[in-house]
Amino acid sequence: MLSRVAERIYWMGRYLERVENTARLVASYEELLLDLPQDAGLDWSLALKILGDEAAYRENGGGDDELTFLLASPDNLASLRAAIAYARENARTSRDLLPSESWQAINELHLATRDLALSGARLTDDIVARCHEISGILEGTMSHGQAYQFLRLGRSLERADMTTRMIDVAAAILMSEGEELVHYRNGIWRAVLRALSGFQAYRQTMRRAIIAEHVMRFLLLDPCFPRSVLHCVNVLDAAARALPGGEDARAEVARLAASLERVDPSSLSYASVHEYVDEFQVELGDLHGVISETWLNPLAIG
Image (cartoon, rainbow, N blue to C red; front, side):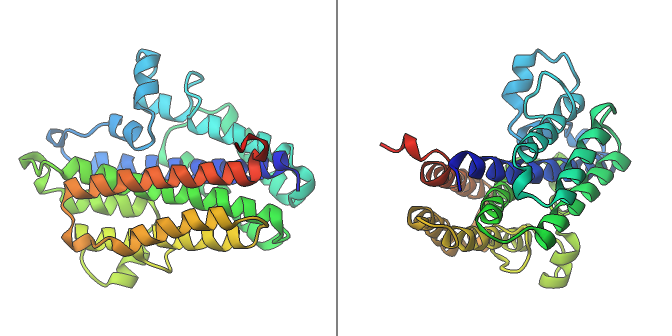
């Protein structure tokens, strides 16, 4: 497979996952803001922080409100609408490797959000449902050859990134244990689970009340929940194993797995959670670099 084709499929997987994650986050965070009193001190700037868009928003000068900037601002190259456009373009230029139904579904997602003001739970729910449709088509009808493995690499790396971001920001919010948030701690972790569609799976698996330690253990270490970090790492390893020349990528994945083996959520303070997740994010970035050097831009090696 040509490296430029592999790169398009890889980034299509990342962008599609980013679209779904952002839509989930907006819907869940909107519910959280409605549930919390105004003195809790939370606003949409926190959602920008989760998605790493704070600096871009400040550079934009606040021309749009935070939610508009996050979803649809033409000045935000990381907006939800931009991610949909990038996913569509990567799919369009890789149509010969994709099921025709998947290209049609991706194009319909693009058309459905192109001319609309992106706000409100109904629209974000529709975006998530369309992403489910696309994922189902790709999973059920795409040949599980090399192109599919690059799709899995992109999707799983992006998914692990989002899960760790959610844990990190929840820990950062609660790090000070301030009076205004102490009574809403469980509600914040509940919102994290809902943003990752993990609330029901958490209750079924852990059979416990929503407590920070148990939520972190579930989201980091559950081997069966598709959005847990461990599950994503296992998928990354399987995808790298199925591709030629994947030894360096598998070594990086093994580093991630070893990092997870060492972590004990019951012994972590919120400050140490923040430190651990920052280190893990760096390792995810290293893995992306190895994937790029090995398969996506091999001429850049050396």
